[in-house]
Image (cartoon, rainbow, N blue to C red; front, side, top):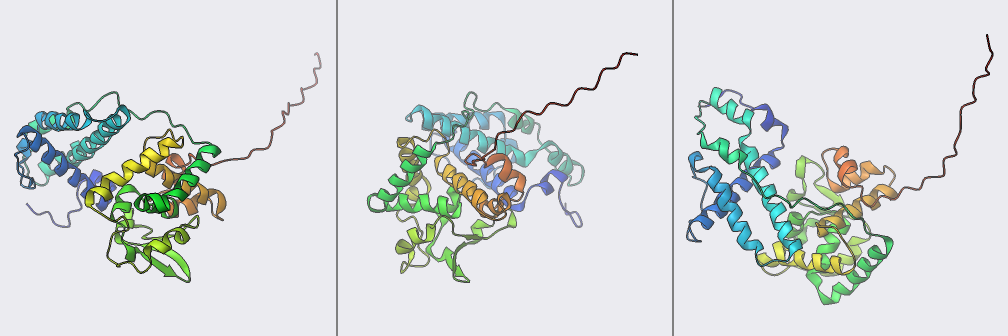
Length: 323
């Protein structure tokens, strides 16, 4: 029933609207794939009317079975990546039904929460697929990366544009997928990227080009249809194939990290932090983090600090005077 001036439970208010909407979409993705898996691929694609009573531990099992089938044909690295991504989907989907969220709807909204939901929220996820310890690339790897990137302009233009969108504008994978030619604008003679999908956490919807990225991309953006995607071709090319090729290229030059295109974003953010007047705060703006703490905690892989030697200084011992 409606509640006057409803703001939702405290847990829901802590998350941004974008995060809450994303979690709901992950829940729908999970239910859709699990349903197709259980029905042998003959299920319906529409799941928005799925009742709460269908959210059971079996649903998690069916979803994991579907991921297992996808992973069977992949190498070890890709298989672990699929499992980690699946775990993220499960965690985000279950966050829609946190304990205090359910309590709120039970006590205030009058909604009856089915008992099966507890099993849905506690069913085990994939084990043994945690991220490996981070191994930052050395200067040789960085140099080889940019040498390979230069060749891609004639060998694989989509991949070339993909990597420069991550490097020069700090775009995430989903943002690269949706980037269009009319996102590129000029403000006070300076190149920017501007798009509604860039405003994660409702902040920083415009990004100033960095690392000379606009000069690299301009010949392939100017005079192109404004509403066309920057990454041309099919939807599969934009949301999967180009990123797989990015991983292959980065592995070939020595990157040992797992989220490859995202590492280019992290590298660029660290270049901003080291070379701009406001350092980490400019990096926060470039990466569009709601809090500078996120920038400091998770995106400092490529920062290089130069520390002068600290000389050992011992305190002067007190003079001993016998009594």
